Image (cartoon, rainbow, N blue to C red; front, side, top):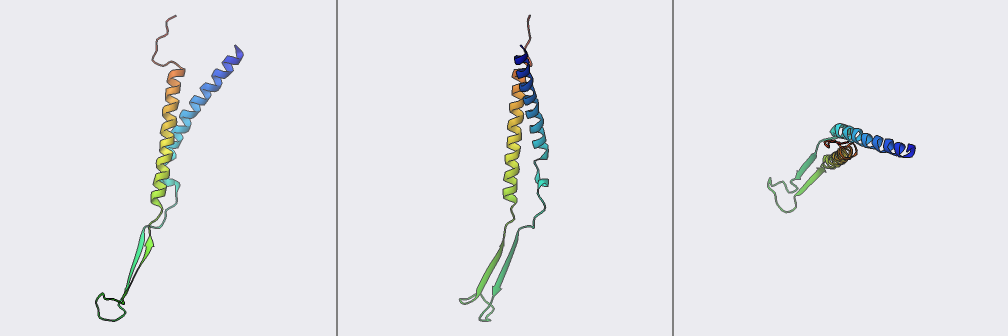
Length: 107
């Protein structure tokens, strides 16, 4: 019976570890994980090459800039929260089944 008791202790420890880890992931997964980035920036340049003060053929327009990587960060945070929620639900259902919560024992 000592082997069965050891196995039960290992499984119980893993279930409790899953719950604690998932709660930690859910509390830590936010935008504070990343340093502040520069905001989206665009630069629009118009050169009136023929000096007619109107947009005409021969004039040049330049658009420079781009987006910061906030979309990638937010999707990473969403994935981390999804993993945290999954492990929390898994750990809670394992503990519900493992410890037979809500069932009456008749002996």
